[in-house]
Length: 339
Length: 266
Image (cartoon, rainbow over all chains, first blue to last red; front, side, top):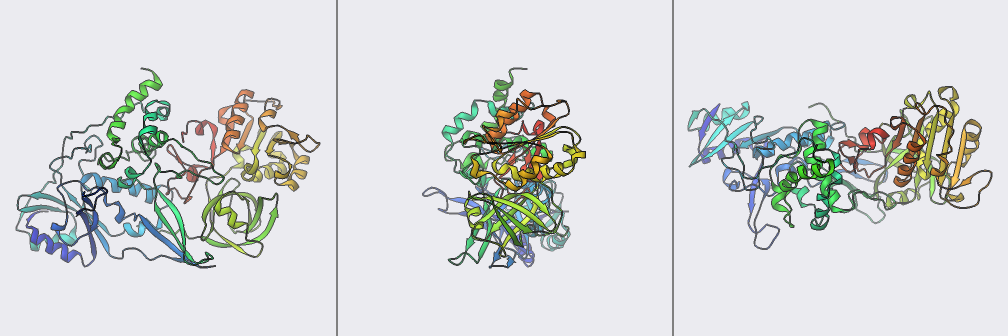
């Protein structure tokens, strides 16, 4: 059912829902950017619509709500282990764009299906509801249309931003009653989506692991500094590294936690005795790119990359991920000939 | 959502016995009740130092053997613990070797250094069940005499199969030869190259050159098996570190057919 609703009334709905749900949305952190005098938009708890920033795509995604950057798994003493309490006991209501809603499907594939379901992810994934915020135009670096993530149907609440008011499509019963009480009027609502983007990508049909031999990767060995920002802003990057922190000097008590990891950063493949794979940054770039637009699909049937373009914007070396994708065709020609 | 169990919490296992092979390599016989296959591995943890994947080098009644080399910061700490003490571990993980798939034909097992651990159970099995295979040859390589692992096993294995024990350096004796494992591949006696099976486990360069040698000798790609080793933080298909292409070494491996693993690009 669709509704027109004012911002003030939407806040009332949010207030009512906040009894059982933490509300998360993109928030502007003034001077919170990575360079002097720059701002940052990232996800945080919010209480009202006005706290959220929709004029630009958030620099970081919603994923930390489900995959905290640091997550304590358990506490240990000499011979005992105590599981850590969940970071959140309420449900979560997450406001996001279509590309990010598609990313949820990728996180679920990784954490609920690749092998057995992950305990800690499952715990935070329970009782999560999604509010899809429609896009009227695409950002400069967005390429969702080519990644087929521009349209989303699997939302609980859909929302369009209109002059002085909001349009809402509610598929979620618990919230419908609240919208019935607070709406200005009822209407049919289709959530806005873009149908074209300025940035375009084309993934070659003959793409295969043979691309590893292409010369294009050498350039990234020179340009990439292995900082891993592309992984941390990516809504679909899910890797972590285990860390033990200890509370006493002899190391008998402490905690084990997992922290977000990056396949671009040194140490990702280090094994005991000094061995490592993909020492060159170019090889890491190939490993990452191929996961996003090839390897993941081989396993799951759909691409990992959702085309949000965040990695393009965050790279301090101005390496464009969409540009790398578009070079793959040339790379395949180089390694396979023209056939 | 169904009830999900917490696979990250390790269980406490008593160290039943410690077998010292060399100055830096010990086998820890750990209490374990459950099914396990050679080639599978456990995540062994020492709070404060973290976890490391260690492959099963032997399977007993209510025990598993973990042969640990003192090379990383996790494994150093393990060496400070002895019989009666305990380690935290979780597993077993990975597919391991399925002896049914390796049996029935001539079998060659090539292993280098601690690479003997994951195949030790396979060697034992086919040593004891000669009816399950044709001729069996093992080529095992170690750096020098003091690096030889499982010395007691070799005495038994020599009666059960054709054993080539070689050292990278030193003097040749009745017990062992000198040279890399690859030196002995061309002279392997094989009756039927179409069906002969080979298993290769060891450090990456040793595996690469051994496979080249086997292919030159005429072995079929689909009859060669390898076991891979990668950094792993979970063993559960989540942390991402062990992924190669679309394969997860912890879930889909660590044992692969060479025909599959040859296209896996790190």
